Amino acid sequence: METSNNPKSAEAQYFRRLLIAVGLVLAVGLLVAVIWVSIKVWLAVFAGVLLAVFFRTLTFWVSKATHLPSLWAFVLVLLVLLGLAALGSRLLAPRLVEQFTELTQRLPAAIDRIQQHLSQSGWSRYLPQTLPSASELASSAGKLAANAATFFSLSIEAVATFFVIVFLGIYLAAAPQVYLNGLVLLFPLSNRGRVRQILDKLGATLGHWLLGQMVSMLVVGTLIALGLTLLGVPLGLALGVLAGLLNFVPIVGSLFSALPAVLLAFLVSPLHPLYVILLYLLVHAGIESHLLVPLIQRYAVNLPPAVAVVALFLMGQLFGFLGLLLAIPLAATLLVLVKTVYLQDVLGDHSLGSAQKNSAAHRQ
Image 1 (cartoon, rainbow, N blue to C red):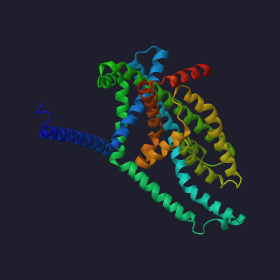
Image 2 (image 1 turned 30 degrees about the horizontal axis):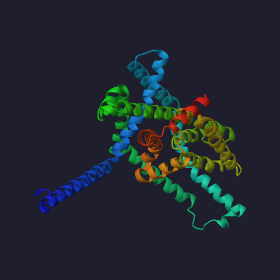
Image 3 (image 1 turned 120 degrees about the horizontal axis):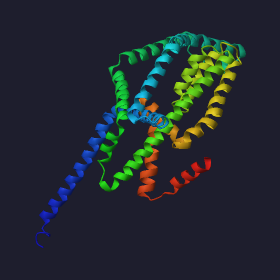
Image 4 (image 1 turned 90 degrees about the vertical axis):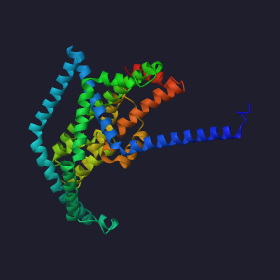
């Protein structure tokens, strides 16, 4: 009793707890700092995981259709994808390079035409008098393109990141159970079954989302290319490919892809930009939003538009182009984890999952 009431003993226990608390805070701070410093590496790892999920989803479908073993189905998927890439490069690459080169040359002429039209129609008096000339814009665009080309061709970091993503995706897709089992082993025995369920849910969600995005990119790019060609807008193939690629980034991508098409439409007639805007609205707001997106979200996570916009803005500001590309799948991953881990496991609320199952059954 005397020892427990000893002031020195109580003071020693207090300092011991204080040191433990300070040590924990420092350890957490150090962990956060290490993750933040190496965040680009983790983003590349996540991109590799996404690529592996894409490969595995295709592998599952091929294996189910052909009854091939999983490994041979994966090899077949890789060979088919490489063959399609080689065929596309053989047929389209020379023409695409030519059209993208011509695109950089025609944009200054389109800007000149816009300025002339504005001055003739009287709208120029409502615009700032310090607008850059077409030659200045062309010079700036040329310098920017040259710097970007230099960066992507010479940057060791960019090349290393690309190969890390590709090889990581291939290795993870070739033997996914090895890595999944190793990750599950990090959790207590009583929780391993639930962890595996959550990982399977994440894989299925991201896999269906990725395949849906690929279909959406292909459809959007094809429709834009055909529509621009029918409207008589030059460089329809390059603009269609640009629209399809940028469609991977929702909302922002469609806006950026429409801008050069609208500018080039001024070279045809003053009314053609309106036709081009209507075409993009028809494809993105009509066909994609009302036909493709519901099919994509039928089996994938339904990401609210406001969450998507915040994720795009935040990741783009923090981590640049790579963050912008991975913003939506990261947000979808976090949303699945919140629903499964926090709402269902922590709060015990299973009503959301039941509602989603009933909705999916109703749609089927």
